[in-house]
Length: 196
Image (cartoon, rainbow, N blue to C red; front, top):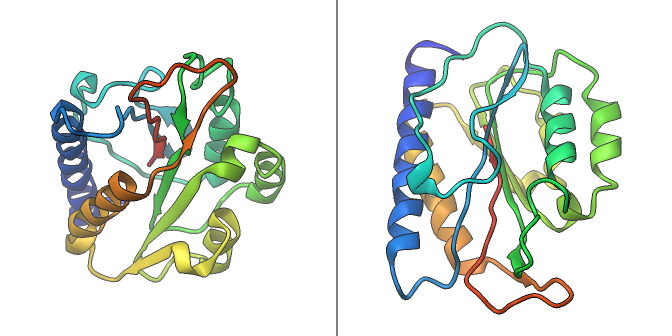
């Protein structure tokens, strides 16, 4: 992903982070949203230090090139969707929200990673969506990852990415579901996970 696509992606991510900041600062908000950003190209790399308050995320933009190591990204997600990693607080959590964005086909063995990830209970509970940019994407793979073709958004025009991602934010705010933990305190706490 490069050129105008990466520019539009970076702009959309900044807009979404601002939406989350605004949401968390509203005293009438039902949840406290935290985010994590994961980039995958040649390998996968977290851009945030665990789940973070949106206001604490210093997003300088990403650049991607080379491969589309989707399997590496799925492994990283599986490792972090755990009580010992992302979900260490003793509060209630909303189902994670995971958004995959790609303009390419997997270049590694994603199927093995996905099989393992599908046994992860947090992933099973998660709301998942994929945004496919352009026509060089394997839609069957994305359908398999998010569970249904209805959760795959196809964009031929990357300039619409910001609008689509903001729309997904709004959906998150209005449809999140709590999963109280044993002995959980009743506080505002939702933990969307947002891999990129």
